[in-house]
Amino acid sequence: MNELDNPYYSPSQFIQYYTSTVGKPFALKIETEAMSPRFPSGSILLIDPDRTPIDCDFLLVRNHLPDLQLRQLFINNQFHYLEAHNPKCERLILSKNDRILGVVFQIIICF
Image (tube, rainbow, N blue to C red):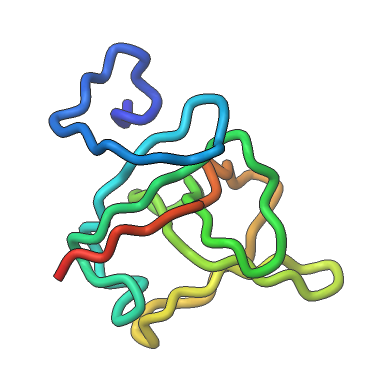
């Protein structure tokens, strides 16, 4: 079980932020290079699990890969693509089996 699926998970660090988001937003620290150089490893994402994603939003997704995926959503007719900013990472097609965990609404860049 991943910590995001565990209702008893206790975060190791708290971040204070101000937003008009209601519900249960959460923060996640980037530990991969998939979105670099735009969002370097160590940056902190603030994610709204209740927001409906639209074209060009950044999403946190659980799919068939072992790790959670942070990607930018691009909608092209019938296909929904998940694009990494790092050219070494592959483009993914969002499928009906993928679970969108939330939409990124704020990023704290940490170098």
